View (cartoon, rainbow, N blue to C red):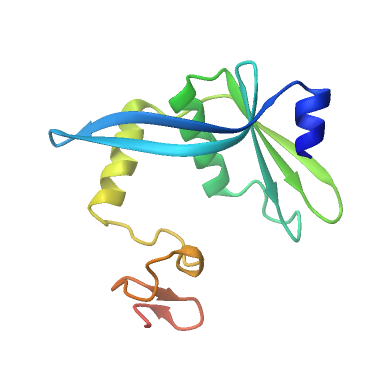
Length: 141
């Protein structure tokens, strides 16, 4: 996929992005890495075992955040499943206010974790008081 993006589309891949925001007088630097960028378009690539339930809400939000961070025209969610490759276009990013609100929720752990599956990939899962065991529900350590 990377070869196609670079050689055929002349896209940049694994593009680091960052943006500083101020919350309660403190400056925070948000960082991320987009899968690809072609001109002013962001491309996020996701794999899935099934095409049921796509596009996923968290993937759309991630792309909207990247659109904001790069002031991009729009973004494309590219899903690769065993059955097909599907594109979803996202034409607006989130506002700076919404980005600050999301960051504030994260910083103050108001809604942590937002999705049960996040704990499975978190490096702090073993020591986190908010850990969710998908089989048992919240705070099952």
